[in-house]
Image (tube, rainbow, N blue to C red; front, side):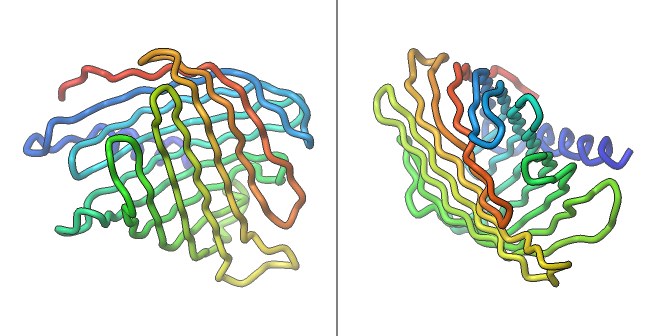
Length: 235
């Protein structure tokens, strides 16, 4: 029940609809391919995402997994954001994440963060954003109630240039609660993607994810076939 209830709230959140809002736009994304890490060798990777946007709001649910012979990296994330008051370039956001990463000995991490973001640049061809806020998580969710508190900073860049699309994201979590033992949970998470758009629905993507923490880890590099399309939903 501890896992089912948050997933239920996530589903309700993304499908919530104010009929007085702008026309909703839905888009779906799927990927499948291979992944390599020097720590865990070769495996398979999968990704799915459902995105809902209006002029002033953004909500999405995404899943990605890297499955190696002995190790697993899985993330299920839901994010909601909306324009902050009347400022067109500033938005508030909150993110809920469940994560498993056996490379870093994380059996199940429950994570929540919230704060404000700033569109440094926003256009049809791409965005440049900064985010700042606070984060809370529990790295041993099933066995303890001990939570860790962080200050969070994030930067993202995405751009589409004809048949090429690129994305770069970096998040830094600085632990501000007491360190238990001698191991800090401060970490940097990096995502980099480059996609060749074969047509308006199919693409070939390469990139890497990297969790940088005290425990030594290597980037996970992936190559995937991607599918993406608008969804004609009305609620």
